[in-house]
Image (tube, rainbow, N blue to C red; front, side, top):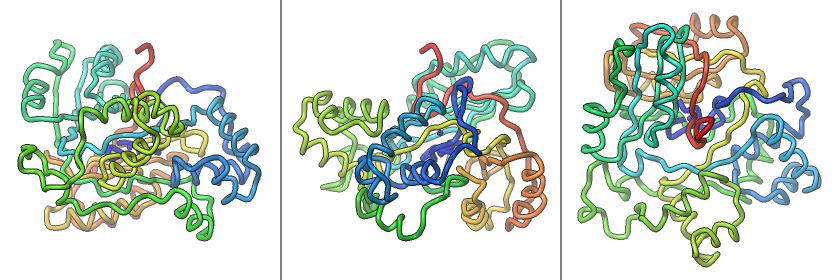
Length: 367
């Protein structure tokens, strides 16, 4: 989700955020009817619900749902994918900002996008700034990354790395896609309910040796890799296909997905062209908040419908926010009203996103 959350999509992340590649001939927002909008909202809330279950909630035929899904997939890149919640697994996400000499940012961003540990790679601010999200699984990987792994060419003029300390935004970000009634949302919870998370203390904290994990806690295993890889490719893959890929029994696949979701280790996100929802302005906001107000400010901004992702970070700014708007007029109104009213706000730096080279859950073009 920076991110975002999208993949409107979050680093824990939000999904349905921003389209990764050059846009297809897309369905315009005005061409989306009520069923289209309800289907998008339903997929955000119940990503693995069957077409028949979705059709029952939306009160249309399952053939209609299947046809709409295929059309949106073909015209706007709609897809569902599964992701590991790195923070819950004890991994650490970093926001890395690189300043580049004019004319060199695209090449550097392309190099970063090929790395398996980068999740988002975006171009900002006139094409001279790159921001990427890097997921680090151990202190050794962190040291190797920052001491040796990042681009060190003379075209990189500055690097700043900020560790993500806490994500305020929820995994399921509906934003501009909200179209379901309270009754429909309740019905979706019945057919594909997001499992109630176990207490965080049952998952190993960052850096915890496996010998110190609470007995009975659900943790990631090497044997999960084929399952997670298939879900990252297609979060709606049928259980039979997942069973064939993992060489597990179908009941084992269902049980393991449930265990990982309940432990907060696995979540599902939605990817589609953000223009489909009328979004034309994507901005990263770097906020400096008084420490005593950081939690309150983070929770407040996470409740704003324009915000797919908000997280507390280390560094000179301590609240990183990804925001989406229909136009610059809406952005101006937001900056001068609700954002300005955040408790403890000391400064704001805004950086428009001009391109996405890689997004979470999808490999870069040409990979």
